[in-house]
Length: 229
Image (cartoon, rainbow, N blue to C red; front, side, top):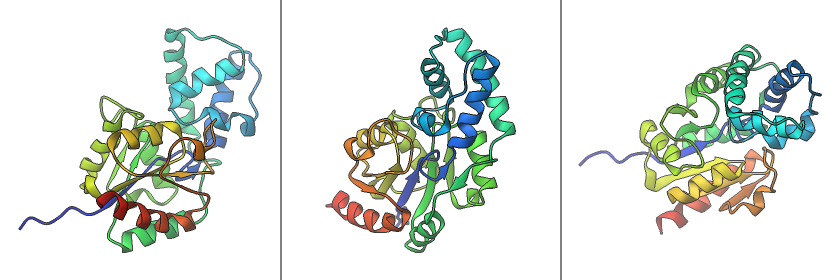
Protein backbone atom coordinates (compact mmCIF):
# COMPACT_ATOMS: atom_id res chain seq x y z
CA UNK A 1 0.00 0.00 0.00
CA UNK A 2 1.26 3.52 -0.76
CA UNK A 3 2.36 5.57 2.22
CA UNK A 4 -0.18 8.18 3.32
CA UNK A 5 0.77 11.83 3.15
CA UNK A 6 1.41 13.65 6.44
CA UNK A 7 -0.88 16.33 7.86
CA UNK A 8 0.33 19.84 7.13
CA UNK A 9 0.17 23.29 8.69
CA UNK A 10 0.58 26.16 6.23
CA UNK A 11 1.57 29.57 7.58
CA UNK A 12 1.43 33.08 6.25
CA UNK A 13 4.63 35.01 7.03
CA UNK A 14 4.20 38.76 7.67
CA UNK A 15 2.06 39.27 10.76
CA UNK A 16 1.74 35.51 11.30
CA UNK A 17 5.15 33.93 11.75
CA UNK A 18 7.02 37.17 12.30
CA UNK A 19 6.53 40.79 13.27
CA UNK A 20 7.94 42.47 10.15
CA UNK A 21 6.19 45.84 10.17
CA UNK A 22 9.26 47.80 11.22
CA UNK A 23 11.29 46.75 8.20
CA UNK A 24 8.39 46.82 5.70
CA UNK A 25 7.13 50.26 6.74
CA UNK A 26 10.72 51.43 6.94
CA UNK A 27 11.09 50.66 3.24
CA UNK A 28 7.72 52.23 2.43
CA UNK A 29 8.83 55.38 4.25
CA UNK A 30 12.07 55.37 2.26
CA UNK A 31 9.98 55.54 -0.91
CA UNK A 32 7.65 58.20 0.49
CA UNK A 33 10.43 60.52 1.59
CA UNK A 34 12.20 60.05 -1.73
CA UNK A 35 8.99 61.34 -3.36
CA UNK A 36 8.87 64.33 -0.99
CA UNK A 37 6.06 62.90 1.15
CA UNK A 38 5.85 62.57 4.91
CA UNK A 39 6.68 59.26 6.61
CA UNK A 40 3.88 57.14 8.07
CA UNK A 41 4.14 56.09 11.73
CA UNK A 42 4.73 52.34 11.91
CA UNK A 43 1.93 51.77 14.43
CA UNK A 44 -0.57 53.53 12.18
CA UNK A 45 0.65 51.88 8.99
CA UNK A 46 0.75 48.25 10.22
CA UNK A 47 -2.64 47.44 8.74
CA UNK A 48 -1.47 48.46 5.26
CA UNK A 49 0.56 45.23 5.20
CA UNK A 50 -0.88 41.88 4.17
CA UNK A 51 -1.39 41.77 0.42
CA UNK A 52 2.21 42.04 -0.78
CA UNK A 53 4.61 44.86 -1.60
CA UNK A 54 2.68 46.27 -4.56
CA UNK A 55 -0.46 46.67 -2.48
CA UNK A 56 1.57 48.12 0.41
CA UNK A 57 3.02 50.77 -1.92
CA UNK A 58 -0.40 51.69 -3.30
CA UNK A 59 -1.99 51.82 0.14
CA UNK A 60 0.92 53.81 1.55
CA UNK A 61 0.79 56.43 -1.16
CA UNK A 62 -3.00 56.61 -0.83
CA UNK A 63 -2.56 57.23 2.90
CA UNK A 64 -0.05 59.96 2.10
CA UNK A 65 -2.52 61.56 -0.33
CA UNK A 66 -0.54 60.80 -3.48
CA UNK A 67 -2.04 58.96 -6.46
CA UNK A 68 0.10 56.50 -8.38
CA UNK A 69 -0.17 55.47 -12.01
CA UNK A 70 0.26 51.74 -12.68
CA UNK A 71 3.56 52.43 -14.39
CA UNK A 72 4.92 54.45 -11.49
CA UNK A 73 3.77 51.78 -9.06
CA UNK A 74 5.78 49.19 -11.00
CA UNK A 75 8.88 51.41 -10.86
CA UNK A 76 8.48 51.90 -7.12
CA UNK A 77 7.95 48.16 -6.65
CA UNK A 78 11.43 47.50 -8.04
CA UNK A 79 12.85 50.21 -5.76
CA UNK A 80 11.00 48.63 -2.85
CA UNK A 81 12.48 45.20 -3.53
CA UNK A 82 16.01 46.58 -3.73
CA UNK A 83 15.76 48.59 -0.50
CA UNK A 84 13.85 45.99 1.47
CA UNK A 85 16.26 43.27 0.41
CA UNK A 86 19.08 45.29 1.95
CA UNK A 87 17.16 45.91 5.20
CA UNK A 88 15.29 42.62 5.47
CA UNK A 89 15.81 41.68 9.08
CA UNK A 90 16.85 44.76 11.05
CA UNK A 91 13.73 44.95 13.24
CA UNK A 92 11.81 41.78 12.34
CA UNK A 93 11.41 38.99 14.90
CA UNK A 94 9.40 35.83 15.50
CA UNK A 95 6.25 35.96 17.58
CA UNK A 96 6.37 34.58 21.13
CA UNK A 97 5.65 30.88 21.43
CA UNK A 98 6.04 30.17 17.71
CA UNK A 99 9.09 27.92 17.93
CA UNK A 100 7.49 25.84 20.68
CA UNK A 101 4.30 25.50 18.60
CA UNK A 102 6.31 24.35 15.58
CA UNK A 103 8.12 21.84 17.79
CA UNK A 104 4.82 20.37 18.95
CA UNK A 105 3.33 20.18 15.46
CA UNK A 106 6.42 18.43 14.12
CA UNK A 107 6.36 16.01 17.07
CA UNK A 108 2.75 15.23 16.12
CA UNK A 109 3.86 14.34 12.59
CA UNK A 110 2.92 17.55 10.82
CA UNK A 111 4.74 18.86 7.80
CA UNK A 112 5.16 22.65 7.78
CA UNK A 113 4.98 25.12 4.87
CA UNK A 114 4.79 28.85 4.20
CA UNK A 115 2.41 30.52 1.75
CA UNK A 116 3.07 34.26 1.60
CA UNK A 117 2.47 37.21 -0.70
CA UNK A 118 6.05 38.31 0.01
CA UNK A 119 8.31 37.50 -2.95
CA UNK A 120 9.87 34.07 -2.51
CA UNK A 121 13.57 35.07 -2.31
CA UNK A 122 12.85 37.56 0.46
CA UNK A 123 10.68 35.04 2.31
CA UNK A 124 13.36 32.36 2.15
CA UNK A 125 16.14 34.71 3.25
CA UNK A 126 14.11 36.24 6.07
CA UNK A 127 13.08 32.87 7.49
CA UNK A 128 16.66 31.64 7.26
CA UNK A 129 17.92 34.72 9.09
CA UNK A 130 15.23 34.23 11.74
CA UNK A 131 16.52 30.67 12.20
CA UNK A 132 13.48 28.68 11.07
CA UNK A 133 13.74 28.42 7.29
CA UNK A 134 14.95 24.83 7.44
CA UNK A 135 11.75 23.74 9.16
CA UNK A 136 9.50 24.29 6.15
CA UNK A 137 9.08 21.71 3.40
CA UNK A 138 8.04 24.51 1.03
CA UNK A 139 8.26 28.31 1.14
CA UNK A 140 6.05 29.71 -1.63
CA UNK A 141 5.84 33.41 -2.40
CA UNK A 142 3.86 35.81 -4.51
CA UNK A 143 5.57 34.83 -7.76
CA UNK A 144 6.13 31.11 -7.08
CA UNK A 145 2.98 30.24 -9.04
CA UNK A 146 0.98 32.26 -11.61
CA UNK A 147 -1.47 33.21 -8.81
CA UNK A 148 -1.32 34.34 -5.19
CA UNK A 149 -3.61 34.77 -2.19
CA UNK A 150 -6.56 35.24 -2.02
CA UNK A 151 -6.54 32.77 -4.91
CA UNK A 152 -7.01 29.39 -3.16
CA UNK A 153 -4.58 27.70 -5.57
CA UNK A 154 -1.71 29.50 -3.85
CA UNK A 155 -2.43 27.41 -0.76
CA UNK A 156 -3.32 24.16 -2.49
CA UNK A 157 -0.20 24.27 -4.68
CA UNK A 158 1.93 25.04 -1.62
CA UNK A 159 0.51 21.94 0.09
CA UNK A 160 1.26 19.86 -3.00
CA UNK A 161 4.82 21.19 -3.24
CA UNK A 162 5.41 20.43 0.45
CA UNK A 163 4.08 16.88 0.10
CA UNK A 164 1.31 17.33 2.66
CA UNK A 165 -2.16 15.81 2.77
CA UNK A 166 -4.73 18.38 1.53
CA UNK A 167 -7.45 16.52 3.46
CA UNK A 168 -5.50 17.04 6.70
CA UNK A 169 -4.32 20.60 6.15
CA UNK A 170 -4.79 23.77 8.18
CA UNK A 171 -3.92 27.35 7.26
CA UNK A 172 -2.68 29.90 9.81
CA UNK A 173 -2.87 33.57 8.90
CA UNK A 174 -3.70 37.08 9.98
CA UNK A 175 -5.47 38.73 7.04
CA UNK A 176 -8.52 38.59 4.82
CA UNK A 177 -6.39 37.23 1.98
CA UNK A 178 -5.32 34.24 4.11
CA UNK A 179 -8.78 33.48 5.39
CA UNK A 180 -10.58 33.95 2.07
CA UNK A 181 -8.05 31.76 0.24
CA UNK A 182 -8.27 28.98 2.81
CA UNK A 183 -12.07 29.03 2.85
CA UNK A 184 -12.21 28.91 -0.95
CA UNK A 185 -9.84 25.94 -0.85
CA UNK A 186 -12.01 24.14 1.70
CA UNK A 187 -9.21 24.19 4.27
CA UNK A 188 -9.83 25.12 7.93
CA UNK A 189 -8.10 28.33 8.94
CA UNK A 190 -6.76 29.69 12.22
CA UNK A 191 -6.66 33.47 12.47
CA UNK A 192 -4.11 35.21 14.69
CA UNK A 193 -5.02 38.47 16.43
CA UNK A 194 -1.52 39.95 16.50
CA UNK A 195 -1.00 40.47 12.76
CA UNK A 196 -1.94 43.01 10.13
CA UNK A 197 -5.55 43.63 9.20
CA UNK A 198 -7.83 46.65 8.98
CA UNK A 199 -10.75 44.48 10.11
CA UNK A 200 -10.54 42.50 13.38
CA UNK A 201 -9.56 38.97 12.47
CA UNK A 202 -12.50 37.61 14.45
CA UNK A 203 -14.83 39.24 11.91
CA UNK A 204 -13.20 37.68 8.85
CA UNK A 205 -14.69 34.21 9.14
CA UNK A 206 -11.74 32.19 10.47
CA UNK A 207 -12.66 28.79 11.91
CA UNK A 208 -10.63 29.49 15.04
CA UNK A 209 -8.92 32.59 16.44
CA UNK A 210 -5.86 32.61 18.70
CA UNK A 211 -4.06 35.44 20.46
CA UNK A 212 -0.85 33.52 21.31
CA UNK A 213 0.97 30.57 19.78
CA UNK A 214 0.46 28.57 22.97
CA UNK A 215 -3.12 28.13 21.68
CA UNK A 216 -2.24 26.86 18.21
CA UNK A 217 -1.89 23.12 18.78
CA UNK A 218 -5.23 22.97 20.58
CA UNK A 219 -6.87 24.84 17.71
CA UNK A 220 -5.38 22.50 15.12
CA UNK A 221 -6.45 19.42 17.09
CA UNK A 222 -9.99 20.80 17.28
CA UNK A 223 -10.23 21.71 13.60
CA UNK A 224 -8.81 18.73 11.77
CA UNK A 225 -11.15 16.10 13.27
CA UNK A 226 -14.05 18.38 12.33
CA UNK A 227 -12.61 18.61 8.81
CA UNK A 228 -12.39 14.83 8.53
CA UNK A 229 -15.85 14.23 9.93
